[in-house]
Image (cartoon, rainbow, N blue to C red; front, side, top):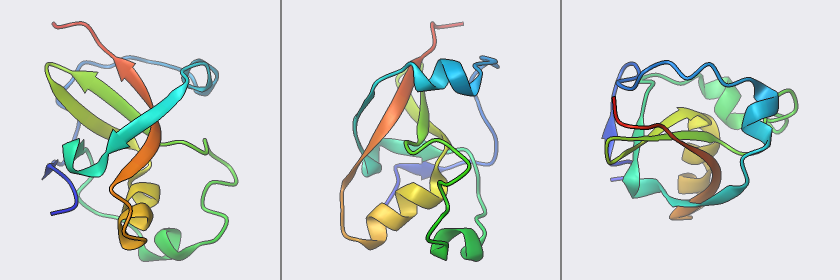
Amino acid sequence: MIFKAVRDGRPYPEHELTMKEWAEIPPRPVRLDQLVTTKRELALDRLLAEDSTFYGDLFPHVVQWEGGLYLEDGLHRALRAALQQRTTIHARVLTLPRG
């Protein structure tokens, strides 16, 4: 199994971080099998694109909330890492307080 679980949507409250605020969070290693995705579907053309991070952040965005690690942005990068037989990725992790 690549990911811990696959969801359709975010279970955590809205955080409203801007791209600039995400960029201030230093990336850290995260195991793929600890991540819960927030998207059920992906576009194969984006997965195979060489420049998929050209317009976005180089690191996936993960939200840590109530004991879970939710992959908010970067599903294609995480899946590409799994296809390359890597078990971890470097991601920016935002920790939200318990509701």
